[in-house]
Length: 455
Image (cartoon, rainbow, N blue to C red; front, side):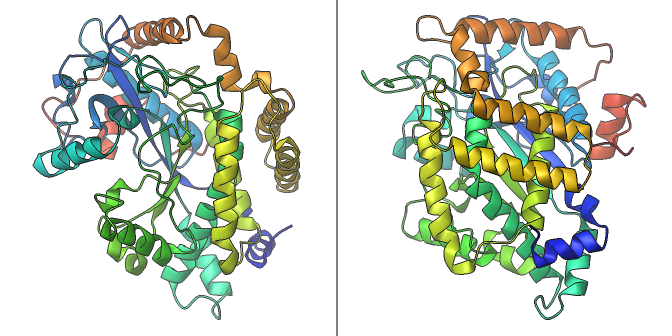
């Protein structure tokens, strides 16, 4: 069951460290007016400068607000940060403004010339204009939940110390562990799309002309109809990842290196070409739709499941180097099939999903991870057996006239009222920027300590 590295970790009673990922969240949501149109209000003044505020910014459109949390040691801490900053954003909205809770955008106007792109300064604004010229405007509008995972330093040091013949230095050991993680998440992206896909339809004017989907799907956003550039990355290793993106820019498939929007990204150095030399510091997972049943777009149990997956990948045998691209290309095809399935139907890969979740259950039991993980896996196993319990299938219960607008606005108003009723009020970012430490104090004021041990 375990790889040699996994067995080493198990023998050294360091398995808990494989779950001790520092976690950061980035959640995108559109600002809309109370009739479900993209808001015409400017970026909220109480949030300060969108180009320098590290905690609330914009992405592609001026209406696409992105909440960014400080790194947190545990899923529950990350969620508390997210909830607090999300409430700050909501409290800064203009009267009548709401946050659209779905991944697919609200109804779009046929004439988009009055919709402002994000105001990021001349260089990036020029990039956005060029991107829009090359693609359909609508393709830049889907929102999602991005998860950043950083491996515990103790784990890297343990692997380096016990495999000196395999890794010359910490850089090699660190990059290798991140490569295993990236390959694992790309390989099983199709399962994440099945379990958490929540974009069964698109609203008016997302598609051009008379085109429409033949039937609802599991995830428009995670399919080829979703976000932006369809450019596959190379996850064989960090060096190959960088070279593939650089070649994409050279071939003019990508405008800039940061246009690469793969399901997983290696992060750590702002200069991409330097990444193999300085090493990955974390990976960014980009394969989750917003969960509209949560005011913050994601649930704690989803984060715990992703941490369990990451732990499992580190402990399991890695793909052979010459097999990586073939296996992951097949995984991309599987994801496209799953994303485009009718969400009410049994998944084509149900047996594979059953087998994989069973392996995760055995892993969790062997590690004695506790009842909360067993409950999560039981719930997800039910989704595999009964597709009507998946998020996209549940959303179909609320479709009216080929639209989820009524449902989305009802949810948005409910979440906005709850935020306005919050006891603790935060002054906002209008006059100052906050470090992570200052932000923690301002948000929680001693009522929550993210440094305490949790899961």
